[in-house]
Picture 1 (spheres, helix red, strand yellow):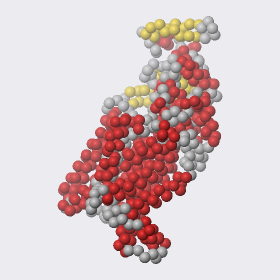
Picture 2: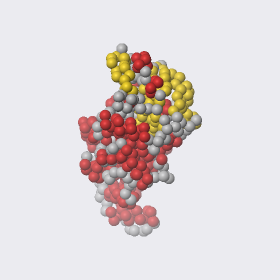
Picture 3: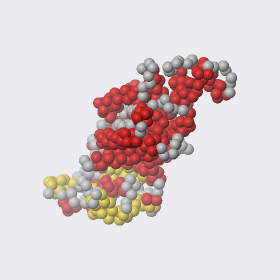
Picture 4: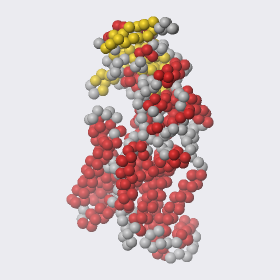
Length: 254
Length: 357
């Protein structure tokens, strides 16, 4: 599915969080969003997810304006993994993941064995099957994050939006989640802090102070000049002798 | 904790069919107990005979006074107690789920106080007459109080930088205190200014929760309100579940947040207002019952909604029996009984933090 933003603006309390952002993510693509803190990555993701409706500009799903779609229809094709979604409810992991089936259930389509299978598969994909009956508040930050990802997978989305999904994860789970996300046959938009991880995206977009300042393949976008100007760091770009991919070596802040 | 897990098999949210016949049975037994126990104890046999006489036109010989007490006094009273208990418990379930706040409750949030003000204003001014206008006045008061308290809570917590205002447990309680005080003061003002001494005493007694004025007329309003509340909550049970991780998460799972929240909160304000207009402000039912039921059946609303409605109904019938029998020769306001039970539970929730959910 194709997801596009056209000249989107978002202002809150007089602060312009998004400034004239246009972006088109092609079907099947893994699109990385990078940028310093407060550059508007999360706000843009929320617009693309339909959680905030822009007053200026519009968001299109397969060329259909999202503003005219019902929330339920949006949720049947787009899933979101937010940062820090917490609960104080006594629910177990499996129940949290089962929430992902909500957009497909109705009084006429009640919970079925197929839904059970989808939930089990999603738990398996993030390696949480052994913890399926654990209560939410007994989980670590990384485990909670994996449950959220499983919940999004249970939505069987055609577009998956992730806001810094590797934040709380140890290195093994960072790599396995990123690998899983890349392998999914869906369109992915992923906000990332680790720029070396962003190198593995098909394309990346750079946010800076509410503007999308550059879009393109990681090799073209992540230059020493860009790292200096937008991220405020001096860095060298090295060649990995093992597989000749690029690695960024950050020297010091400006 | 392990007990709670053992009590609710997880995974499939389906409810065992046993509850489909167990629920009416429990309700029936509770209503019968509420009818049998009191100043004068009445035997089950007599009650069943009176019921048979009334409902199927059987012609058993029963004492006329007993028949009068059972039919026009105790039975309607027990049914209204059940309706109020169910309605107030559900209001608690819904407010706690939507505001993501374990301390949300129609009484603590000042909704009951607002409803009282509205009901008293209508009574004193004598606009129209009858249960319906009283309920409308109570609803207006309840709605006003709810909007005021939520706005205040939102302003209070966004002042400290939290955009997700109403989520802060502290803010809503403080706003609820302010709202309750304001509306209680308004009620006292209206009474002091306009009511005769006798009216005033009657109203004060009613405000603390009083079922003694309940008649069959009230059942025709209270029963549909309680049943309607249960049906709306069951209809929206998946939406209530989807709020587990907050409103944005609910939206990302396809819930139209604004309309769903609007429908549910309006419905619950209406149910609370109807209950308050009949029996006064009964505290803590919406707090105690949902928390107890979450512990027993878990926090998924497919189970929590019917369990809370049932437990609320039984709890209030029980409280009513206690209010009539605890002090011989005297009827306590039922609000006193529920608050004596509810306040310690409230304290427990505060002390143990939000984990109780």
